[in-house]
Length: 150
Image (cartoon, rainbow, N blue to C red):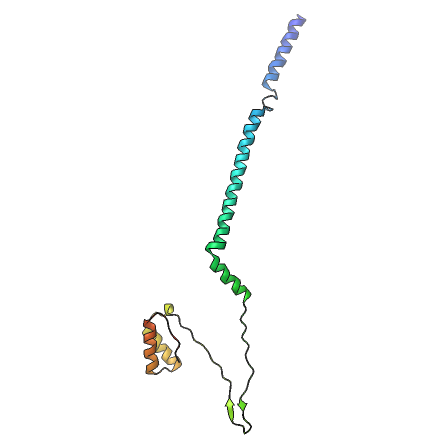
């Protein structure tokens, strides 16, 4: 009887060990397959991130090159006008040989001019243009670029 009871306990232990055994966890074939899948996923993620960065570098260095060159020049070059401090230049008799006066350059972009007639009428009010200057403006507006008026 003791032997039957002992056999029963041994059989129950074996059944319990089969159900809760660690052997399926330490299966090397399953571990290798699982490791391969995780390695493939990690490699794919790193590859996609690298592609994103390479695309961004290509965009910055090749596609938008002129934009960044202009920005770099704007950061590097500083235009600071130096105004001369001059007065009138006189000869020994007090006669004025030269004097300083302010000059300005006005730039008009043809793309920003909506109506050539209104532009010419407004320019003639400000700059006191004569008829020859007005005809030169009309001709210059018809060709590709505006040229400097004398």
